[in-house]
Amino acid sequence: SKAVYPIEYRGGKPPQLIAKIPNALCALALNQFKKLARFNEHRKDIAQIYSKALGKKIIENHLYLRYTLTSAKRDEILRKAKGEGIFLGNWYSSALAPQGVSYEVFGYNPILCPRAEKAGIESFNLPTHIGITKESAKRICSFLRKYL
Image (cartoon, rainbow, N blue to C red; front, side, top):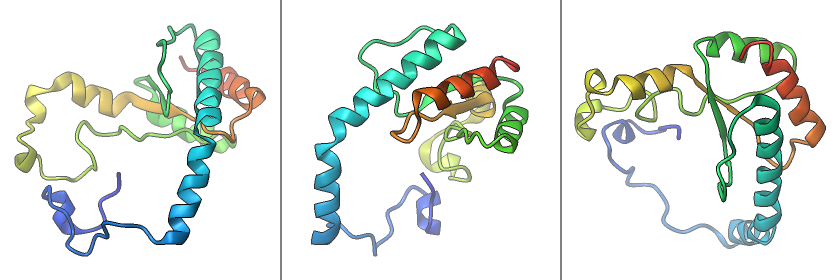
């Protein structure tokens, strides 16, 4: 989640935020919902490829919107992957998102949460979206085996 307005960093909601979407966008969203089951099955299939190739346990009935891994070499992996045309994500790069949000407002103390802080520093995500083919998932795994 990317904060756009300063109030969002303080836990608030922008007053100009719309509560409803226009009809044209609603039609697009409804069309996407028709494809949801196919998209979810695709995500599961891609996650199976990652799990098998990387020796990770698959979580049953999980949709894998993001397939998250951790490594102390995360930044190096992300940089080198991008150089090879592989686009990985770092959606969970901080324990409390979006980065820069007021910890005090949410009652969060990073000193009391060392595991969450470490996970934020080390986590990165493999893509599972409909544009990832089985071949590209295997290519990503081949790349990652050099680092994990």
